[in-house]
Length: 343
Length: 259
Image (cartoon, rainbow over all chains, first blue to last red; front, side, top):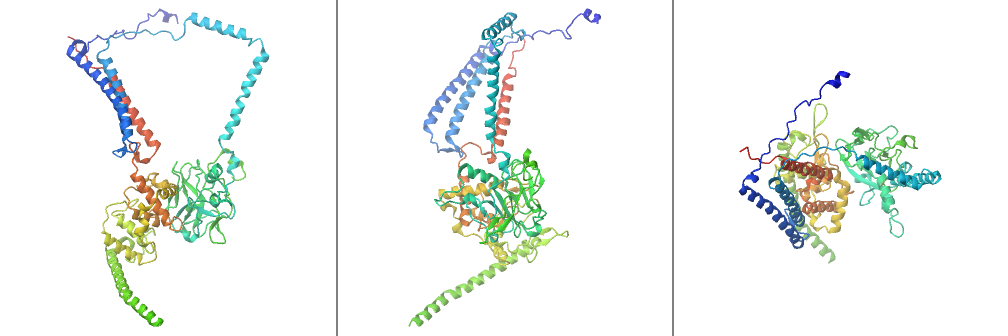
């Protein structure tokens, strides 16, 4: 150990110092210097003109005018303002590189900590504050303040609860026995004879289009949107031979017409990317793929449970109706799912 | 007297219509026959001599049966050049049509004669320019509900598994769009007239055509693929360009060599 201290400390490589200073062309040639000066002032001048052009275009160009099928106003304002800023920046850099002082300077490093005097003064002030406020001497006040601040965290936690529906609201949708399956947007009820093999219908529960005596929708606003977000379904028709129904669900479809939830079981995107020949339903968000010819089984992607199926029936007039709500939870899985009434 | 007038009217009507309909039937059967001849040369190798389809040895479909597909399906497949297929692949691409409009209608007449199926839509229901603004808005609702999943929100098309794709809708004629909805070519689902009515279909077409005419106010459309593509371009080209610019600025400028 002692030997170490005796070894003379030497730098591994000798400090080479600064390289020799070489002047720039503008330092030695007055012509070059003049040229650089004109370049810089030219850029600044053009930037000013573009700023003026911006104002002129702002008043001159109509909102509807197009240029190469783009908005002429956007193009003109963006180009003038953008190039004006760019030219000011480029001019400043050209100025600094060609004409401003060009001497290499060494600035030595200094310690990151403040000076001893500064630190002592700060500590003194802090201690004086603690002493004068009596923070240490009056534990009753101090503890009640700490308690109040701790409890102030609770309202935030309570409010966070409202960010999303509680899991138990996911166990039910508006579907119930006898509710018609209707076409989305138009709200028209559907008969099996309306559907051809290979057909896709983006459908909704009939209640979303039902009106009361005053002609107002039964469900509206947030309520209707929440109901729609959970109850949206797709109805497809395949050749009956192409369908392998889930056990005990052989009679859930009608002549090859089956109905599944439109909400992906991964994170809840609406899925209606339907390949009629492969019977695959794809989610556009993360490519989860469900085989509707095989009970909605997941055959690809991050979803981890099959799409919930809705049992179809016919009402007295021959229109498609639901026979019950979904037997499984629709939408994305969540931690409480396995412990809930439907799993 | 009434009887006499009745007889005269009936006779007149008969002489006015009977010969005409006879020639019409004649013309129809000639058209079907011409279509059959074209079919035997250009289509029968895959679809079979009777258009009932051809199976491979292992029982897969080599060429599907065309019985009952209707004139609309033929007009779409042949009219957009998808059929006849030049080579097998994941999907028949749109290309320059091989048959003339007349030959296409003869082929369609032949296939339509094999079994009942959707016919080629008439001019009136294809007149999307007659759709008012309200209708275009409704067409947009139908489009976003039923079409955007595959064809993208501005009809730019999109990818499907195994090399298949939903084609872009720009430049597709109203008739072909209508026929595609009606017949569901390849992987596309069928949207029958009973569910999406002819008026609704026309509104969808009006919406797609309105999208085509819409100027792109925000600059390049980027295929309408949304914020991911916009972000990629901003990061790679925008910020990458700025970094390149900074490197160029930081590089040492010219120095005068030792004098």
